[in-house]
Length: 256
Length: 368
Image (cartoon, rainbow over the protein chains, first blue to last red):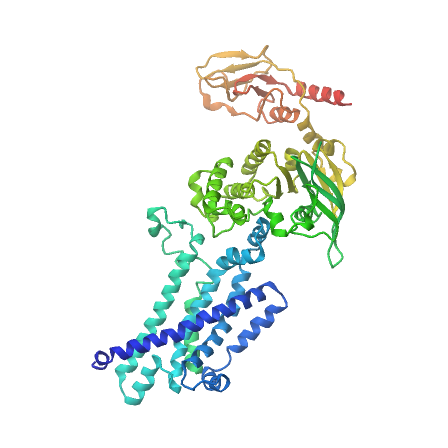
């Protein structure tokens, strides 16, 4: 157990770049998916096209993308840009579908009321549709983030630095501890980010919980009596996230 | 009657599949009135309502509000100038009660503070506790949500209020409260209200005028409710108004009914005859210290001091009230006698059913 103390700097640096490569694609993917999904949710013709098209993207093997993208983008094969672009494509594949479901989950009578109050379509989107789509959307985002954390490692095979580098390096040099550290840090990262998103979701969806209050005026709010029952905000969407994520990690691990 | 706040001119709405939702509708809603659109489902009443704020665009014809063709006003601006209350309240679930009420003032660009103050004062107007202002809609009961829906519609003080089956999803007791409050609000605020319902009783209770829509989007009759009940324009209206229309029409008659006396017993067991000579056939009316009715004691039960034997009384009649309420008070009373009370709730006497029927007969004679 001597490898880690000597290589803390390396592990921290790799964790940083790993995080960057996992999170940035989610942000970019979300920015691309939201307008596409809103379009798909609003039109019966566009929806199957968009949802199926996105699903098709997900069937491209990641390693293939890492190799093909430099040719298309004119980047070096070890460039981090390849990973960012590739993972953004995967995120879009996941999020177009879940964001479409998210927009479709918004109660029609609420939308009608918003229109009847005199919201313009643009105002209605920002003030009503987007906030109400958050619970279901967040389930997709959590899936995407955790999937990305596992997939970023694949880049190490072709020499793009990430926590995956600890696997390839540890394997080549026969350092079991290095591999173990890589595994543990990856898991911690995945679980940590997932929890941060879960908590963010709780804050954004206070209105869904019977005990929740706005404004934070009431002092006892933080410890509101909702118990463990409504832990995942009671949404159809947030519950299944961890399960699908686990499945996805297994799938990508095998597929890559 | 002066101005027409809302006018439909030869309005027709057909859908691409050939169905007609509204068939050649022409109708004027007088300013400051409460007009009810009533009819079975699929008769075009909601579609017509939604053409007023351009949630639905007519296929042909025009809708005017205060003399202006609505199609010439930008949709969002038009809608902000009218209150809209819908069936399932339609409150924004992610906004607090105060934020919901402040929606339209905020859309109109008023400051957060001003909108909030307005929302707080409206909470009082609609009879909700100030503490509820910070709650989310899901934390309110159905009746409270509906009240907030009304407050939200009133927030920008619009001259026109559109209400689409606003009370149909709440239980009958709460609905009766909401209906009473709406009538009260209407008195105080002087709004032009268009109200959609499929419930004829609600239409008769609330409407200054009732527009009965028939299947296929045809306006079958547009008249004051009494006229719809007494003189249905055609077979459809007569069928829709239903078998009880004779009874319902009594709501509009308030003829003097002769009061009879009643043997009463107060909380100390003293018996007196209230309101003239006794005519109660052995029944004794139990009253409290203030002379308000408590219940009935059947013949023979009146001897004992045990007050738990009394039968719960029926509805009460106030002299000057409608003959419908007089008849109902008699029919719902265990003794068959309607209890008449004054404004402070004290017993003034009883009505015998035969006297109510005689009054009905006299009212009919006076009409024709």
